[in-house]
Amino acid sequence: MHTVRIYRLDHLSPTLFQHLKAAQMEAAGVWNACCDLHREARQTRSTWPGQNELQRATKGRFALHSQSVQMVAHAFLANIDTTRKLRATHPKMRMKYPWKTKRFYPVHWPAQAVSIERRRVVLPMGRGRASIVLPLDLPENSGACTLVWNRGFELHVCIEISQAKQAPGKVRATVDLGEIHLAAVTTNTGAAIVISGRGIRSLKRQRNMRHRQLTKKQARCQKYSRRWKKLQHAKNKMASRIERRVRDLRHKATRQVIDFCQDEQVGTLFIGNPHGVRRENKGRHHNQRMAQWEYGKDIDYLTHKSKQARIESFTGSERGTSSQCPVCRQKHRPKGRVWKCRKCGFKGHRDVVGSVNMHRLAYEQPVTFPRSVTYLRPGLSRRSSRAGTPRASS
Ligand SMILES: [Zn+2]
Image 1 (cartoon, rainbow, N blue to C red):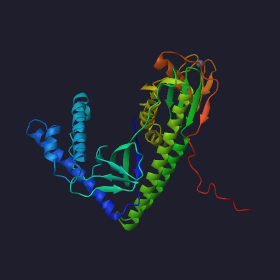
Image 2: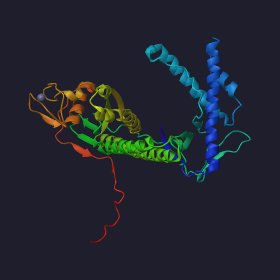
Image 3: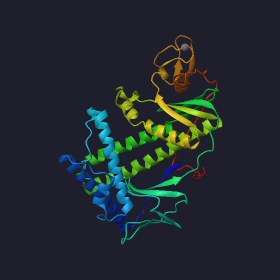
Image 4: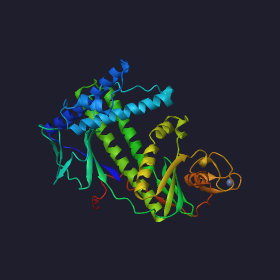
């Protein structure tokens, strides 16, 4: 099984920076060449170029490793394939075939091309050209690398990880994803856990506020002036820092879910997909929170981590699970964090109610409401910059 580890390439020398930039521009050239060839074929109604034709057309023309060139062509063909299918199944989307002239494109090196030495990684640029050498200490089981731009260069490294030998057990569990509580998990044995999403929420709020302040200041500057650029730099720096912190918290939170499942001997995990919740217009503050709620990432991370633990996971709509009483099945929309039933007087945590109801949906087997719920926070979120410094004695 593979996972991707991200290495930030900060503090590069200007020469190396230009080198990396040139490589990405070269890869964009390959993409553009594929684009032109394909457009011509479409316009003249001749046979569309396949892997062989594209390879022949791009071979030896670009200052990249031959396999890096092939990977671009490969990605291009995958793109064409998806577009063709979507045009047939979803005509309303009016998908266009790739048309935009790209300036940059990520450069990919397959595992065979990469050579890992002591404290450095050598990425070949083709015969007769100097390789890119990065001072990174990669683990031995790493393979393919991709050079990505994300407000600065990053190297995404594919790493081989071991999978669990067998499933932890045969217990069935469901996950309710939420924005305030990232995940509420219940099992059919009566165990429950709630992971807080408040840390992520707070970081995003911090980012939105800082973003607003900086944009306001920028509005008073001449566009692209020195001061404007300084503010833009501050904005990017802040945004990428918060993005990394949110990603870290998300990994920790989903790890806690999977650890809980392993402790409770879970064999199958149902992940409720909350799509549709974001459609409703509930005022600008709520709408912004909903728009920035990345439940797709939660689903991805949970699916990947459960695969590693050999827990079988599947997703489906969670429609209506959070608006039904788990005891008497009375329906009403809850207000606040506690679910109160008007008919039978049941009281319980709102997200746990959703998760309990999912058992009926996913496994057609109702479970009783758990007696006790564990609450966890995924690590420290907003740590004070002065934390850990000794207090001045009074
Ligand atoms: Zn009830």
